Amino acid sequence: MLGVFFVIGSIASLILEKYVLANNSHVWLGAIVPVLSIIFIFWQMLNDSMKFNTINVLLAVAYVSLNFIFWGQGNDLYHQRVVHKVYKSSDLQ
Image (tube, rainbow, N blue to C red; front, top):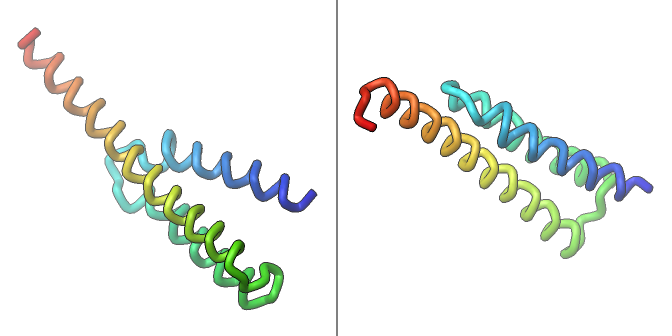
């Protein structure tokens, strides 16, 4: 059951990362979730809540990597929106 909560929480945080936190003009705001996820994973491993084995390390690396990928995609969404506004306001259509 704990695994299901982790998966649901992970998906929710990734969606929040892409469409809310990273999709704005403040680049640092999108870094909150990846940094917190790294801290959370290290804390879990230090407290022995998450065993230090190959599968858990691979899952942790995949999750942190996805956080950074979604951060980049959110930044791209913001830049596309800004470029579209500039293009639309300049009447070059």
